[in-house]
Image: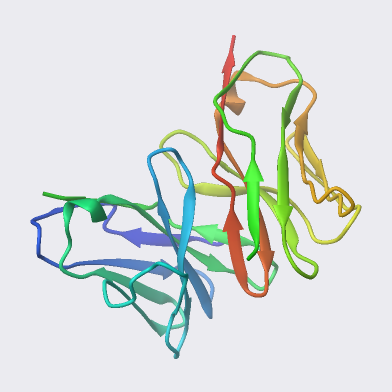
Length: 114
Length: 110
């Protein structure tokens, strides 16, 4: 099946710094990618929809200036957590939508902000 | 807005027991419905899907039927195995967005 790769899988940073997470579709072109945040009790929260060549669509309550999303090509979307704080510590998951109607997920990135 | 509600876990069963994980949804229009599974230490992967009312999705012994009248998509398996232990997510796709339930952790004991 289609493969989505996320990098880094694990990152620790100091409070106030910015962290970039990459999401790549390795063997297909993805015009649409989704970014989720997975909370400790397993719920997946849709943060934003990333569309190639246009601005991301953010869900209500998600700060677009805090979570910058760039979908620069058909195979790459990036999420940058700006001025990270401990409350931003979480598991971030990207996914890419294939024309068959299936959603493929990256392995996830665990962010810990000290 | 659109949303998915699924039963809270964890669900603990003995091997060969019958499994039901309830899922209901709220959506406008005609969403597609999915079950995703996350095995320990792995990413989410598609288990099964149904794209229209009365469709039945099935895979690996699991099945779920898209019931528009009750807005439900309950996951069932007749005989669970230890290897089925994982977190199961119900999801819907509508108007170019995916929404997920909170996940239900299944523990199957030998």
